[in-house]
Each structure stands twice: as C-alpha cells, then as structure tokens.
Amino acid sequence: YIRVSDFKKNTADDLREEIKEMEREGLRSLVLDLRWNPGGLLNASREVCELFLPKG
Image (cartoon, rainbow, N blue to C red; front, top):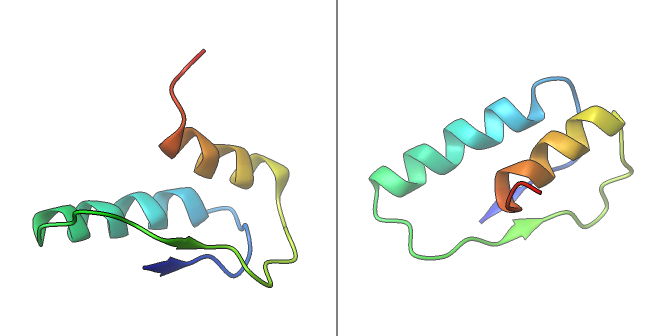
C-alpha cells in the first residue's frame, strides 16, 4: 500500500525507490492510493504513470 498525497518534483523517484524496497521484501501486489490527491505537477504525474504503463 502506497499513498500518494500529491505530485511533486520527486514523487516518481520516491515511488520507484519505495516499490523497489517492497519488491525486496516480497511484494506480491500493490495498492496505489490517490484518494484526496489534489494533483500537482503534471510532469510528475506523467512520470508516475510511466512506472506502471508500457511504453508506446
């Protein structure tokens, strides 16, 4: 479970590191909680999406 409260400059990098740590601990599934996220930097939200979507 990871809650993203808003999209800031380092959100994607922080999320990537958190997911890597969870994978080392045996991550089997992930809930990405965006509830009550008012938004933020468009580029940061795009970078987060790219972590989960195939290129193309």
